[in-house]
Length: 110
Ligand SMILES: N=c1c2ncn([C@@H]3O[C@H](COP(=O)(O)OP(=O)(O)OP(=O)(O)O)[C@@H](O)[C@H]3O)c2ncn1[C@@H]1O[C@H](COP(=O)(O)O)[C@@H](O)[C@H]1O
Image 1 (cartoon, rainbow, N blue to C red):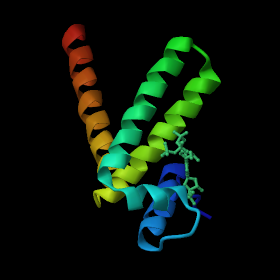
Image 2: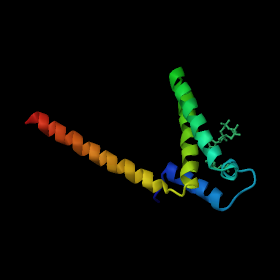
Image 3: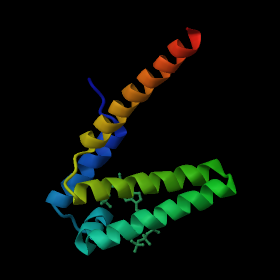
Image 4: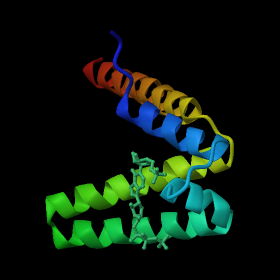
């Protein structure tokens, strides 16, 4: 069985909440409130990530980064942007930057 990536599964749940609202769902609450609320949460979670990282307590930072990633998934779904678009962009950059490093290594060796 091919296990789906945790980010893909999270994004699918978020999209499912958008398409089929459920009672008591925090994700549905965010979609109901709208884009400004979602953006406010992304801002708050970003600030909390910075504070946690400055405190230097790894579990706190992991928790805040997880909150941030979840809210970014909600933002993507709100704007109808597929998660795959971000994955492809990151993949494209890794290849580009990988090629650039390879180029510089060859350049230094010659
Ligand atoms: N990953 C998350 C996740 N991370 C954080 N949160 C919620 O984000 C909120 C952030 O806490 P805050 O104190 O900043 O916010 P708050 O005071 O609760 O609410 P606000 O009034 O500030 O918006 C908490 O209520 C958390 O429960 C999440 N809620 C949902 N998920 C995922 O989404 C799935 C669907 O959840 P529901 O939509 O609730 O069914 C879950 O199974 C999880 O996988």
